[in-house]
Length: 190
Ligand SMILES: [Fe+2]
Image 1 (cartoon, protein in one colour):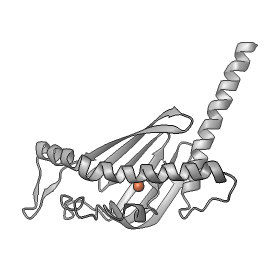
Image 2 (cartoon, rainbow, N blue to C red):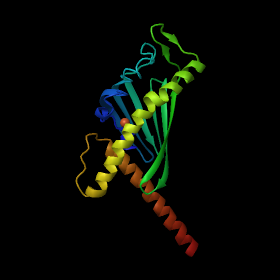
Image 3 (cartoon, protein in one colour):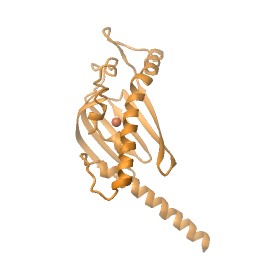
């Protein structure tokens, strides 16, 4: 959750450039969610940028939200994404991504793609763009988790002020779950 909401890791994706030069413009948190916005240049990569219609879609900013237990993003109401987590065990989580594009543009012709063509292009983009980007995140996260196991008591080095908010929300939800379970056990005993 930290990774997919944190746009300060553009260097990791320097080859595909899904976002460039992100500046955090707003963040807020309540009991169930952390909401944030960035001004950034979306889909700047050679492949990923070809089909995005910058005349029609505002690709200079993005909204993101960790709406516990899910995550969503919205770029100009045209490109959206949802992420779902499935914990497998203490150290393994399977993550599902759902991407939505309302339409793409045919390069040079500036024509909006019909739905079947949008789906066709996205199917091609899956192994060429989406998967490699997400695999970069996977490698980085595994390295972070290994480092955390060795240096869990070291002070965290965090560039993004919102990241601790994600961590607090997750920890609070876990504590609420434990309290609920404890209360249920107590009421079963009494
Ligand atoms: Fe990433």
